[in-house]
Length: 493
Ligand SMILES: Nc1ncnc2c1ncn2[C@@H]1O[C@H](COP(=O)(O)OP(=O)(O)O)[C@@H](O)[C@H]1O
Ligand SMILES: [Mg+2]
Image (cartoon, rainbow, N blue to C red; front, side, top):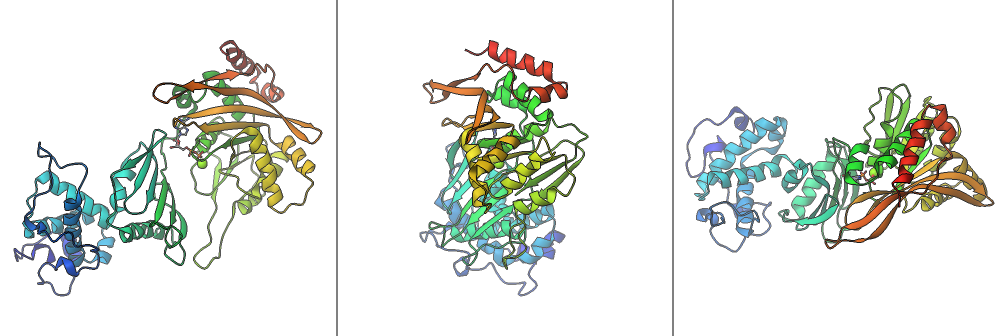
């Protein structure tokens, strides 16, 4: 029984789970010599960690910023553990059993090494090691936090997170780049992919829906780079956006109407500006009876309606085959008798198919794209179509855009980290070769306060009758629209 060997050499029964993963061979072997283990990169500074206590604060609490000593000890316990258990067997246990089993072994190893530790410190070490063996290692505590939007790992020693719009560095680190790559590997293998020197770029998804990108050396020069966009279970609602000051109450009201009366919408914005959040908000106001097809690279939208078909693209497999692009999905959508098509992110030639859908009776279709202003959003659509290989005159493409897109909603992440809806803009039509737009709402930046927070104000541009007025009337929303626009104008400077 490996769990009780080493210094104690006792033959007590451990848990059945621990028993199950015991290595069959050489059961009486004593604790392995740490130095011989391939997991260990550096052997520390030759100090004997066996009897050294963990660093503690004056109050006896473990220091939060773990130091070298802690990592040294952890490395040694970890190495001993890996020698002692059969990881393949361990993988067959469920999470709680596996944690129990690992816990038993770790306690024995710590006891055998005669390390002086409080219960609290031992728990912390155990937690860390369990995360390494069973989960995503040092990432686990970050993955468990709901307030984090993004996790960015730039090599083993540098981990940044984004909380409340601000990017900050954490003191979390990996043992070395090998461990980091190993964890990347574990993440991507769950979706049947692989990341290593020969295929160093990989997209994947965690089981909770979070999106993952890995780029490994030699392409990433300073070690594997891992980016996780955390999946938020509770998507923000328009009410919350109003509370955060991302949009005014009246602006939100107009967005609701835009969603309900089947305007064709493009949500535009930079990375992490809140495009997907906004798109998700807009979909809340779709009637429950409508048949909706969504196309996404990684399913993020959470539609409340009962009649929804969700589609997802697929990257090519290891042999480079089997790819299904956004374009394939959007094209296929048109044969599925959708009433609305929602495209998570328009990046390429699918722009053409989405416009076609908007133009051919699938009113109320929506998509997001990456641009910094409503005007830029429209020219992005044009260039996506041109680059997609359609040899149409640019005027024709623009006419197509002008007749398909009703509204562009612009999201932005300001320099203080706050997110704002900066424009609700209508597409009016063409004048000569130019697409004409008109802003309904805009956000004006005025300045900055002492703490660096952006000061600004939303204002209505005073348009009393937007182009989708007739639509609103058709859907019985005319009065609400008039009231919202009126109130917005009253409260605008
Ligand atoms: N108006 C907002 N206020 C605060 N946080 C927001 C707002 N909009 C989005 N977020 C948060 O910002 C992060 C990125 O939003 P997301 O919609 O995924 O951005 P994008 O699709 O533009 O990359 C998410 O964690 C989301 O919850
Ligand atoms: Mg998005």
